[in-house]
Figure 1 (cartoon, one colour):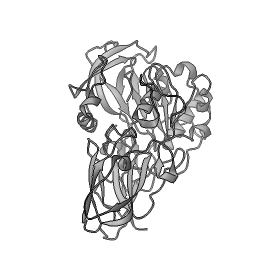
Figure 2: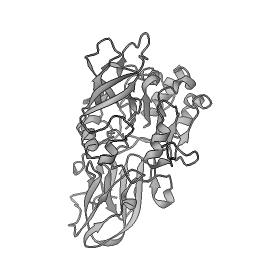
Figure 3: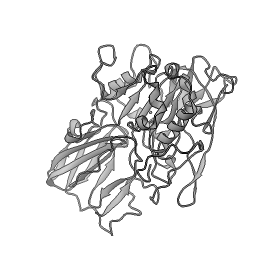
Figure 4: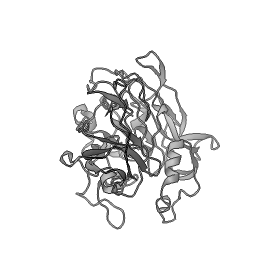
Length: 423
C-alpha cells in the first residue's frame, strides 16, 4: 500500500524516528530515560526485535532502523506516494483532544481520517516506528490547547484516528460536507485497553510510594477513579501496581519487563526494590533499547545513574546524592512544554490548598526536591547516514539547588534522554 511516513507522536516526551536527533521534534509532556527532581514528578524506529541479554555494554545506543530521517507533520519527503496527494477537501472536522479524564488538553496528538484500520499498538515493549499514513489522508497535530481543525472529504464510514504515543483511539465517523464538530468523547485519548472498541493505552507498571504517588496521578488523568481526596480507588486502575518489596524481582527478568511500555520508579521505591544489581542494569538498558520508557524520580536516582552512568553527574554521587529536601524557584525552558502549560485552563493552573500555581510562567516553584544534577552530557552516536546525533539529556525545566554546594548554579531539574528506541 502506498503510504507516507510521519513521526509518531510520543506519549509524554518527544520520541524520534530511528537514526535521528530526538530534539528536532518537540511535542509536549514523557517520559523516560527520565528523571524528575520534584516531589510531584512530570513523564523510535528500526526493527521490532527485542534487545537480547547477551551484552554488558552500558554505552549509548541509537537504534539503526531503515528510515531515512525524521519527518515533521506536513513533510512528505521520502514518501512512497508516487506524487499522489490527498484530494481537495470539502469538509472540516473540528474538536479537541483531551486526556482520558476529558479535562486535560493534549498537545501534539496526531489526528487523521482513513478508510483502513491503522496499525494497532503492540501488547508489550516495541520499537515505535514512524506512523505510516495513507497517501490520500489529511492529518494535523493538535495545538497546545488540544484543539484541531482537520481538512476532510465528505463520506460515510470513515475512521477517525487519534494517536499520542501508545494511546490510540479509532472511531467510525460519517463526514458531511462543511463543518463537522467532533464530540470530545470521540476525539480524546482512551482510558482503557479495549482493541475491540478501538481503544489502546500504554501498558504501564508503577511502584507506588507515598512520596510520589504516581498511581494517584495516573488515576486523575483518567486511567482510574479517585475518591474525594484524590486517591486512587483500588480496582479501578488501568495499569499494574507493583509492590516494591514483593515485586522487585520483575526487574531481574527481562521477559517480565517486556510486558510494559512504561515503568515508573518513583522516589523511595528503591527502599523496597533494593540495590541496582548488574543484571538489573543490563535488563533496564535492554528493555529501554527495545523501546521502553523508564521513569525515575528523586531519591530513587540510583535507578538512573547506575544503568545510564554517562548521561549525567549527580551532586555528591560519589558519596551520597540524596541531599535532603529543598525547594527551587525554577523555569520552564522547553518552548513546547511552556506553550502547553500556558494553554491549560485556569482551574488546572491552580490546584489549591496553598500549593504553588502556574500563574507566573515560565517561573514555577518546585517543592521537596531531593537530588541535584551537576551536569548533563552530550552523548553522540552515529546514525545510518553516518551522521553524529546527540541522544543525551534534553532539559525541560531548570533551577537552582539550595542543597548543593553552589546554591546559585542553575541546574537541569527535569530531563530526558534517548537510548536505542526508548527513553
